Length: 168
Image: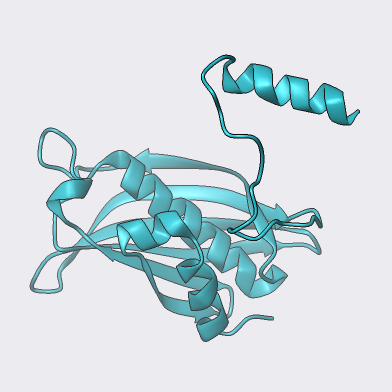
């Protein structure tokens, strides 16, 4: 299985996680904690942390917790989140724990807190979800083109359908 340093490298390999400044502060024994600094660019129009940021943190914490028991090649199978109160503070902290794991799937729960400058934590969301083993596939390097660039002449759904027909 993974150790925290390998898990941190996995998080660092995610461009969106780097954009948000996410960091893994706990990883192992069926649990994972993800944190990020709250900043103005991540707020919605009323000055609260955007719900999408809370959902990102819950999703990634759930999947990393599952990774402590299933290994690194995982995909989120699904999750739900309940927003309990507006998120304000200095840090967002999402802590997830595995509640059941099989050979290829793990179900986890996550609590999402904001932490103020004095270290006081406030629960702002609760989530539950599952992660499953990812199917084996060949992933191109970032330097290789993944597909033809979108030209604007057809919508992405049409392009995907065309590509699927060509490969069938």
